[in-house]
Image (tube, rainbow, N blue to C red):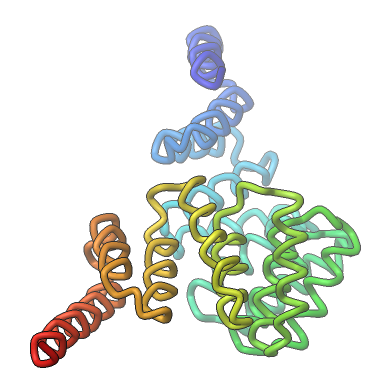
Length: 283
């Protein structure tokens, strides 16, 4: 469907090659297709054809730059959009994310707060502000922001998941469990939810339930190296060393660069070797 849309707009440009709106629409199609360089060129063309027109093209361009990890360019584009039209909550929200990636946390906070000042029901800004507080280990403040977001959108499963993580950090495991279960009730295919619920079950010494969570995560996404690693840790905790070894090996096949997996695999292999030596001595 999106490919057909792109062909439609390309044909339209043959008829109206200086129509900035067509370039803008084509850019959004390319962005949806994750063709970011093509989207960037379309937004630049739209801006060049309408330099003093809608600031939305600068906002779209900034979003693409952010996805391309071109943070300096993203920042400049958001600021240009706000220069044209200062009361844009979406621009402030996007700029806040840029500042957060640049470790400019004070400016990031100010942007999210400005977005909420303009648009008090902006769920994404509450979530982003909550994530910013969580990054700084300000758990109470983060919790407040996520709860405000949930008041506006009770079905936001990622927000429920975030609250579950906060309750883990607060050592309130039953509350964490309930939030992960709620998140999975809304989106049963959420791999991170299954993984973190499994970690809670481990802490609660509910090992069979934890195993089922990790297996479910792998059923949904067989390439989830974290699920294999968590399952391996569970097996190791139960002294099922060969099973742990196999899971770490599978995790390493998926993510060969992970030092965490490599180190844990090495420790398991040492334990297996020691166990074999001990068995020989016993004989």
